[in-house]
Picture 1 (tube, rainbow, N blue to C red):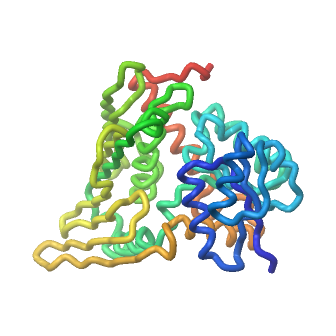
Picture 2 (picture 1 turned 135 degrees about the vertical axis):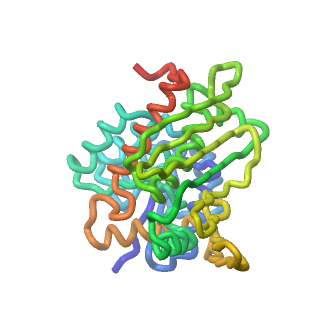
Picture 3 (picture 1 turned 90 degrees about the vertical axis):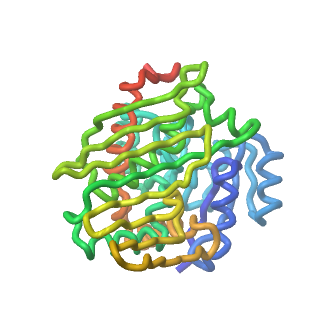
Length: 328
């Protein structure tokens, strides 16, 4: 089979990670093109990663006939518009998280795959890495009903322009949509998507944008998850599930390479799963597998899951009184 040809939409940090990961996938896929708002940025990105085709606008790359998949790595307030653009030109889509900003946009998203018969998946790379598969295996071996609660925390603090972009209201900034959606996704993957949001707390900056959030999810059967996120401080980024026999720890659940099984009265056991590149290679490979099978959605991360996560984020934003100026 010919390798799938990807075109990268955007040239930021995550796009660079994607391009680096693609280099270890052999003949499964190639990065055929890159597009940016300016030709200079696209050319610089191309020079760094050895990408053949360069486009100075997203619209120009959408017209290209030698691209199978568009990888969208622009700020999330642009995601829907860019997905609509590439879907209209019959490109399959892998889009960074959060795939859309709110449930109203999610309604339009769901129409794209069916209308254009294309594959669409959200790029939650965290759940495709081998360490998370091991975590799920250990979790299931002890029985899902043998775990009482989980705790997840994720936090970063970026200096300069990048830090400012994280809290820019025009870009739908804030801790919840930037990193808190990882808390929601990982808790739902472990304890299930049928949760209710209970306690919610936030700290906002002078612009009214959340820089810290804490929220509790009730997953039923007495199980709860306690989650915190911030864009103004560094945290351990660990997921820990607790039960009467001990705990499981997923180190740096944003993209883990290590799982610790800590049974009461026993020496903890650590399982390590080094990346081939930087971890993004596993979700890219999954997309290729789905395309091989003719899927329009991932069997591991269907759009229904993505919609539930953004719906939950909507509820949390309603609770903390956060609405962006571009939302109706």
